[in-house]
Length: 377
Image (cartoon, rainbow, N blue to C red; front, side, top):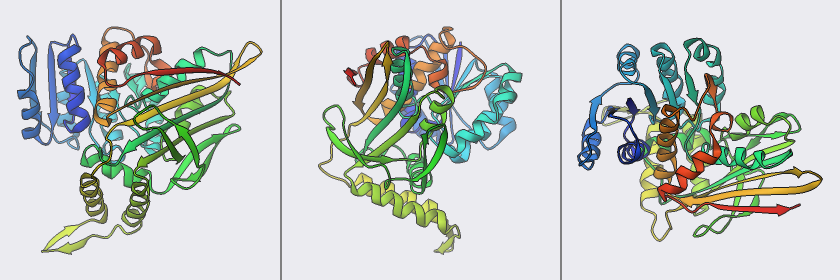
């Protein structure tokens, strides 16, 4: 079996390493525009009878990308930012008729991806939409909690990210583009527009070393996908914050400037677009943060009833962003090849992932301690 990993940044590298150490794939191909970085990652992977190689690819060159995809059994897409590359890569996978796991966390792109549902089904492939940390692990947590209740009333996902662990530069583009303006939450059968990092403030206790943090509505896909899968829920939220809190302000301020003013400026005879400048500035500024713990955290609370008794089931975990995003995608690809993820079309994790198997594998990786609470409510 052959797996193709697109992208070898922070998340892609983590996925590749997990595939090498734990999967049954005989061939792992890493395709990226930065071949030197990919080669350095592959040089650390030695000692197993697995064919592993890197190839330079421009994912915007659809004919070349499609031909590369056709030579593999499944694809993991870790190319970012999602708002630029997610949909074109998915369309290429449909054309190639090869199944795809991705880590999409852009809420506008999520709507576009669901528009590919019919074409994906016609091609006979499955696109697992957003199998990273959040969305991804948090969505699997939601399925786990929902399956243990007879009635579902509310689903609340939340996440914390350390400014000192900003991932790669592509993530900075995503944060400024998707998290600086509007967000969506779900109330009484409808998606409702709110303001990121302003509305819905509440204090949530996350696993150590994170602890209690104020979180806010955020521009993420969870309310979109979860409301499609669990329409009976009256309220579905996704809230987040960065540590330290001033990083939230950096995102909203820089993001609004980058989105509002799209005209390039000329510096030393080179045109620089505001988003390129501000994303790079944000990334460098996060890298200078000192004395800030790097682990982030995830938390999902599902409220409902078991019989006549009100229950709230809470799943939570903590860890680093690269492992927490890349490894779930790798696990998803492995489960799919083993026949443990099934279906066709465009499906979020809560629709197609066996939560018991997934969480068992995730815990075995040791990337974060899983905590489970059940509260009478």
